[in-house]
Length: 70
Image (cartoon, rainbow, N blue to C red; front, side, top):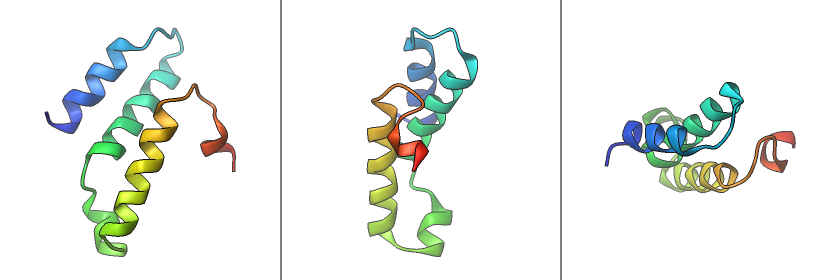
């Protein structure tokens, strides 16, 4: 499945009335699933994997969460 479909599925599955939080979760899904060429260009595959893992972890929690406040 392409990242945008994952993001839309996550958006519509959220039981949250806060539109901004739903959009942030959708962005986290995109970050966690897309092989971001900007990150690869500026760094390497290891950093991209770390960013994706952090985004996935942050998306599994309610916002705001510690991943965004440090």
